[in-house]
Image 1 (tube, rainbow, N blue to C red):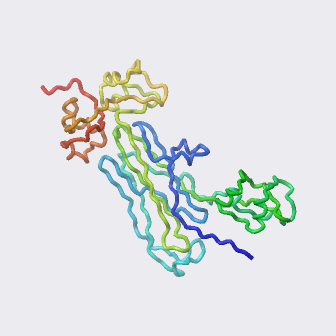
Image 2: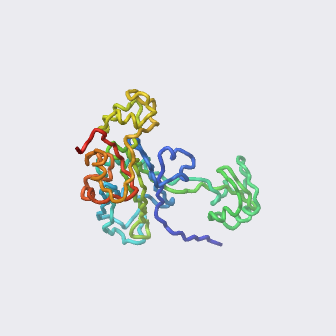
Length: 364
């Protein structure tokens, strides 16, 4: 009698990020990205998915770190919680003694400050049981095994039929070596005098959250790094579960605003406190500034991008274009009050600033 024993390594969960529209597509997992660009006025939704093997669970999924180019840096806190660890899921732990109580670290996720307009909701759906699929890697006898099934499609494959006389479970590489393109729940094969059918096996478990970001008029030039952390169960054979952290970058375009349906240039100029005639000149495709947009797919220019030259600082640029320091800060979130000491320092050469010149201003 033979027994097949496989030793597997329990890896931490896999973290993925998707645009919400992409998540509706069949192959959305191949479309994940870590870089997102958005205009002021747009609504960005990113689905965060943590996946793990079917014998594990996702214990937590939340924000662990946020770094913003305004100078704000946020970190999640970890506090210790007394937990009874002698059993897990009704089974005796192999690591801890029965009824043992120890302090287990627990993540307390970040609550982003209100001015960022960043929230994390969910879960998108409750953590469910592992999804079952038919892959062909595991086979079971049909009924009594000796009777040919009355329904389904018979698979004729000499190599697989011969292998099933010895083992009924195959690794992914072993299954691919058979060269069988597809099997389904009603496929069956004869091996000797016994009939086998592929078993439905648990593929993986997952847990989802949704990152929602709506950049406001205060976010021109805002950039931030948002990190999510996922951790799995400690299981029966170890003291703590594994965790993984992954980050995404979100960038708000300078000097650009995504127009909502019905908004006109007069309304938007009031929103950003600029002269509507000047905004009209920056957007020549608008024939009439008081006519509202017909759809929400267009963007407008709020000012002009200016490339910083060697030796320039914020005061130089503000004075040259007739702007106050508050106006420069308003259109460039990275020059926020937190960075006021750097206003007299030289800016990075070739970096971009959003400038709205004031032609009526004079130093005389």
